[in-house]
Image 1 (cartoon, rainbow, N blue to C red):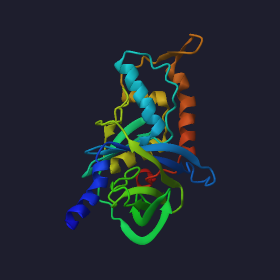
Image 2: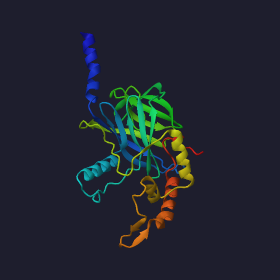
Image 3: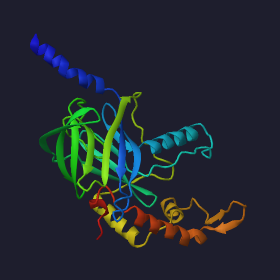
Image 4: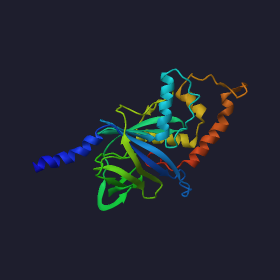
Length: 282
């Protein structure tokens, strides 16, 4: 009888979180490695479904939802005022496989990897956000990560690509404190299959990590403007002409120099990628 009661108690948390559930994380990061005192904070979300989980920027998810609604109802997207999130990655995790969408300029690429994290568990504990947490360390993506997980929420998930610990990750940061995720809230959400929306004309190209790194280095040496990239991604879609706010015709090529300068500046301002290995210089 005692065994049955014990098993029932152990199973209760799993039955609670077997439903679709959302975990909101505050993401603090240093975008430029040369400016360690410049920190940006953004809200991100981890949605856990029955067979997989997804992680992305909260505001990006809301904007994607608004765009999908407008398209499905033949409505204009002009009234959608939500910004894109600074955190661009979109990650989907199953039991065996993790896929993450990474960007080179405006072009998305889908990279798949096996879930084989070699966590090193510590006996050290502390309370974070009201949860009793245990420490674990990991070498991943060219960084050393320090994670704090709690067995109070028995979900083997966490932000970004991280998973595999015996409880939800409440906080994780790299040892330089350039990237920190902290759990702030969690609640049930309606059952669904996905919250990741692929926008028209921005379909991710499936690629392996080595090929992505090569493309990234090619782009870093000769960055392209958004219009150039869009035309390469969608051949024949644009005519090569555009109109300014006064209705005057201008050639798209006239904007090339300005857009390339902006792309180069973005590379300088956002050089501290969460996965160093993917973006290492050759």
